[in-house]
Length: 349
Image 1: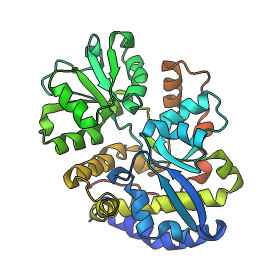
Image 2 (image 1 turned 45 degrees about the horizontal axis):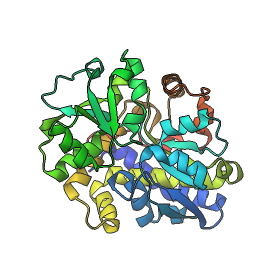
Image 3 (image 1 turned 60 degrees about the horizontal axis):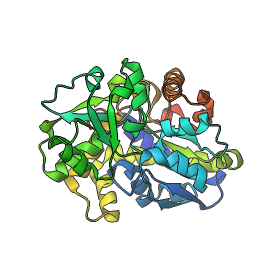
């Protein structure tokens, strides 16, 4: 069945109703929250939609009003400027907001991606094999792409003079970026491995025509997407945040246990979705972005403080940010799901 071990899955499901009832009592009945997603509805945020469909948020006393995002790297900044209660997006962008002493910056409360999902895609036959090979090359991506925005960390980690890499931006869809690269318009493309894979499938391009330089191995201290909440909400209504985190955790468990149900939840909201592409995106997310060995030790949602501190420091150095925030300024562990209820295995998905 599952990407969870059977015993852990059954324990999680058995405990979940009691958890939801308990947290629902703490939260005000049907508290309404404004939620900014990383993108429109898709397979890689389906823990929200499946949780909604199965009543997990309702059980927790919550009603979520969703706004489609414009990319994971924009979520933290938009949450700060537009007053969202909840945001789902890249934690490195959150570090930047906090490092600039933005008092309205949200705080992360559940680390969804314990690996960086970022890659630089290159044609399979490209001479680019290592970061050093990028010198003198042309790499293209969206201006707010996480891989593009965190490239200074990769460059610094591997002694690459970033000024020798020609970086340009484009508003084309990911399919256009990748097919343009294969046509010789550039040497590489910034993106997520899941998004680029889905774009290739949608475009009918064989996956073996592209190779990845993965940030997950080249910059191993970086995390990826996280659930964030406003500091006001965390301060004034901690019970609501606790209820939200546990309901999202139930949603992740449900997605891990039944990918078909997760994809169906997405299709109900996006009838025109490309089924094969979205399945590939979800598989890449579960296996890769949420597949760091750290998950077996700490569970999905939690972080390794020492690793997160190294990632924060590397980002702040590479991007010359005004200060280096402490881990607690970025991730509030007070809301972490109890260890017994965390998902600790995604193997076998």
